[in-house]
Amino acid sequence: MRGVTQLSGSFETYFTQQGDPDYLIEARRKAMRSYESLDIPRFEKSDLTHRNLAAFKIEAAAAGNTWQAIADPYLAQDGQSSVLVIADGQVVLKRGLEQVEANGAVFTNLRSAAVSHRKLVEKHLGTAVSYDENQLISLQTALWRDGAFIYVPSGVTLTEPLQLICVTTASGHGSFPRNLIIAEASSAVTLYDAYLAAETITDELHVGVTEVVVGPDAHVVVGSVQDFPKAATTILSRRANVGKNGRMDWVFGELSEGFTVADFGSVLQGDGSKSTSHAIAVGIGRAHIDMTARMIHIGRFSESDTMARGVMQGRSNGVYRGFTQIHKGASGSDGQQTEKLLMLSPQSRADAIPMLLIDENDVKCGHAASVGQISEDQLFYLMSRGISERDAKAMIVWGFLQPVLAEISIERMREAVTSMLERKMA
Image 1 (cartoon, rainbow, N blue to C red):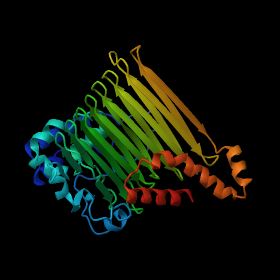
Image 2 (spheres, helix red, strand yellow; image 1 turned 30 degrees about the vertical axis):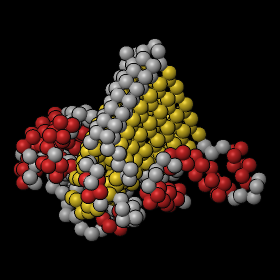
Image 3 (cartoon, helix red, strand yellow; image 1 turned 45 degrees about the vertical axis):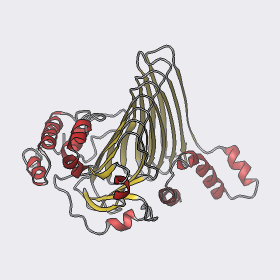
Image 4 (spheres, rainbow, N blue to C red; image 1 turned 30 degrees about the horizontal axis):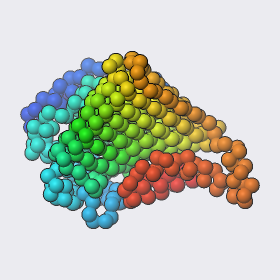
């Protein structure tokens, strides 16, 4: 275990000074004890033993103005969107949040919501992602500095997407964003979030957690983009608990150049609940990207559909798992997976690993997985029409990624992701 001894005794004083309520201090204390007792998590194809897991501090870095240039390409510029920007764990911009409040909903930072909406936060925080799942989740639960809090009451539909941008500008402090979304019965909300860092960042530990509570007949969409430099180690956990006839849609883009392990998905607790995930990963250099889309079926007639597209260049390594589990009693459930990874260089590596755990007879399940290089037939066809080899390869790759890109409905964000992809694949 790395980075344990310097925390005991000092973190509690820091968060007390930050104004955290007693119940949150107790939750942090409990998580810290768990962090100190657990070993470094082990992942099947991602070895953390050589990563610097002590690249963090208890206190946040001072947020300067450099975050603006990093966040600007992603920020909606229409002046109407509700936007929250957090830089180095501190809120630096709130815009248009009153529009959400006019509908009876709440969109604010989690730190302030822990006080102003105490009952909701105390009831739901930690219910989708348990503090003791592994050592790094325990660390995140103990040290999270801020994130987004969204609450949508019953019957309320927020038609305009909300936007969260988290920026890291200082090395060595670590980033631990924590988000909590609560959508009550028959409500609807969409959040697009981006996690970005300055290219000068070195030895950075990023551990992010997003929890979603989807009530009966509610619909939540979360679209996330990650872009961290090669020196960063990123561990992500995003999970939703979905009630009867509720729906959870995930859109996930991993563009980081460092070491990433991401686990996202839904627990389909209610009858008739549904969830989808659309994931895209682009690896360059020596990037290591390990993603798992996890769908757990508990309710009857629940449905899940996961789709992934990955493009690996240079000496990058991509791993994608589709994990579907159908519990006993979840009759009538339907779980589908599709994983496709494309390797653009002989030195790159990709693994598509479909996994089905089925403990019920009356179900439908299927998976399709493929790993390979660009089709020579497609390339020949395009080049025979006078298109250069370089342009032909680019056209094939963009067509390969398009099904996921199409799921990003905020134009500004889609343009930023497209521009970033063009730069990374040049």
